[in-house]
Amino acid sequence: MEAMIRAIVKAFVKASRGSEDMPEKNYQKLVTDQLKNLMAETDSADAVKEVREDMGETQEGKVSFTEFMNLLGYLATKLSDKHQAGKGTAPEPCKLITPSSSRMSGPLIGNSSGSESNLENAMQLMIQTFHKYSGNEGDKYTLSRGELKDMLTQELGNYLGNPQDKDAVDKVMGDLDANNDGEVDFTEFVILVGALTVACNDFFLEYNQKIEKKQ
Image (cartoon, one colour):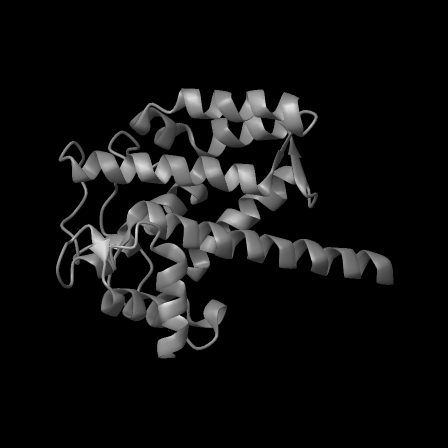
C-alpha cells in the first residue's frame, strides 16, 4: 500500500509540475490519460465535471491535492460498491494478493484489457488490500479491530511508526470509525488512505521547497 500512496503522489506531482495545485488543462489530461478505464467502469463523468466546476469557484481554475484525492476516493468507492453488488469480476476476498507481493492477481476494471495506468493500478490495489484483510473474520466488507491492526502492521508500518501499539490502533480505529460500530468500512478506509497520501504529498512539497532555497 505504501507503493500505492507513492504512485498517487507521483501522478499528481507530475501533472502539477511540483506545485500545490494542478491547472485545469493538466487535470483534464490526467483524467483522460490515467483514469479513462476507471471512469468508464464506474460511469463517473459527473464527479469529474463537479471538480472542474469547483475549480472556477474556489481555486481559480486549479485542483488542489485534497480535491484530487476526493475524486480518487469517490471512484474507488464506486468501483468497490459495484463489485460488492456482484456486478464486477473481482476475485474472492482474501485471495486477491499475497503478503509478499503488491501485484494484483486479477483486474477489477472489467473493460481495461490489461491497459490500466499506474493510477488505475493504485486504485485497484487500494480496493484489493482492503478486502484482503476484511475477509479474515466477521463481516467480509468491514475491518474489525484485529484486521485493522494486521493491515496497519503489514501494509503501513513505515508510515505509521509502530502500528503494533494497542493505543495507536485504538486511535486509528476511533478516528476512522465514523459511525461508531466498532468496524471500519471501505468508505472510512478511504479516509485513512487520503490522509496518509495528503501527508506524503505535503512532505514532498516541503522537501522540494527546501531544495529550491538551497539552490
